[in-house]
Length: 117
Length: 112
Image: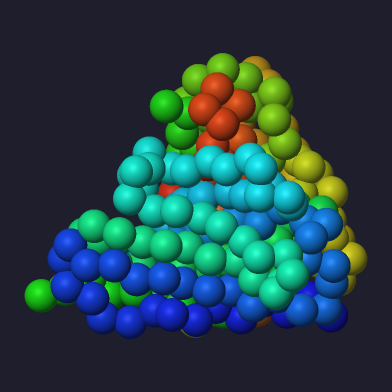
C-alpha cells in the first residue's frame, strides 16, 4: 500500500533553513509526480510545490518562490523540500502528496515546521 | 490570481442533505477538474470526489459532486448525513495560467 512518511520538521528561527524529507514506499516512486502542501495552524490547505516524475519540471507557489527548493531522488524513493530564509508565516504542517485519481490522491501524515525566535 | 471561495461553515442534522459550494473567481470553473478533500481533526486530507463528480473506491455514494457553469461553481453534496461526516471539506482545482494548484478556504461541516 502507498505510504508517505515526512520528516525533518522542527523549530527554527526566522531567516533559518530546514530540509524536509518524504520517504515513499508501496509503489514505483519514479512513475509519479509529487507535491508539497502545507497547512498553517487552524488554517486551510496551501499548495507549495510540484515536481514531475523525472524531476525535470518544477513549480512553486508565489509565496515560496526563490526561497524553497523541491527535489527528488528516485533511487532512494525520496522527496525533499529545502526551505531557506524562513519566515513566521511559513509555520505550518507540511504534507507530501502523490498523484492518484486526484492530483493529491495520497498524503503523508505531515511534519510540523515552526518558525519562531 | 485564480481563487476558489467556499462558505466558512455549514451545519445540518443527521439524515439530512447538505451542499457545499465552491465558486471560482475568474474564467470558467469547468475548464479544469475540481476535486474535494475531507479532513477530519488531526488527520491528513483524503479524496472524496475527483474530476468533478467521480468517487474513489471506498467513498460512499452519499457523496456526489457537480459543476454549474452558469454560476461558475462546483458543489459537493452529502446525503443521509452521518455524524462521521463531520469534518473540514476543501475544493481544489488548477490555475493553468501559472500553473498552480489552488485550494478553496475550506468549509467546516457540523452534523448535529
